[in-house]
Image (spheres, rainbow, N blue to C red):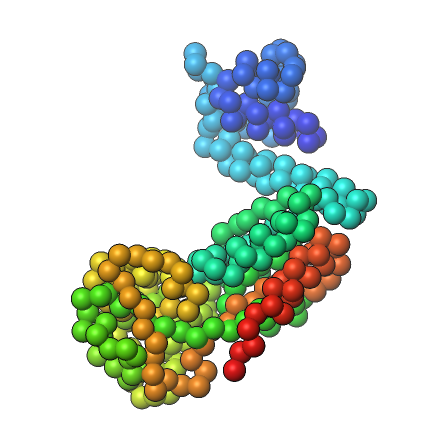
Length: 301
């Protein structure tokens, strides 16, 4: 089986019809039908159910389609990275992003990179921390953004900035009447935390800090991301600790308050992570944009 046959299979699977797939591939129907039959014979499985309306994937066919698309993606990336090496400023950059980081800093970095390198096709992938690390090692992405990264021997992380944490409160909540909220007051109210995945994570950080102060937080909800957490605050489910950058997100009924009498390390980082051995020109250009963005930030106390 060769890559051309995989393309034929993907086209038939997506079009669900030999005729439409043949037109898409600019070939006639009989050779396409023969190629699909040859793939099935080689694998020894039935990939399609032939119906009067067209071609319907079997369960095995759906699995094979997922794998075929992965192979096609890797082939596309290999082709574009060859062009990148030859031309320097052309190619593809795969960037992993996550929940709250996409609210403020990451879009600004991506926009600055796009303005400087318009010939680079940037593809964004929503991934948690563990998935980003795996995707880097599998070379499915070039760089990721996340928080509280644990050092990895084959990966490099660079701090972009740290930011203070605020409390998202429903405007009808008693705490909303305070200009700032003492840290110990958190123990008396239901707390929404995020994210559930990628331990150690922000939830672990909050629990550890509360333990240092002498109490265990009343965690009522653990959600996937900060946006969901703030949405639950708007609905009256509790209060939520969020990075300051999330104040750019406005939801009706939610106010943000600083936290007073807090521990000294009451902040969270935003970092980027990439393969230590990745010396491609596009990654170097992107890291240059990240570092320029970091250099332009106000000095932190």
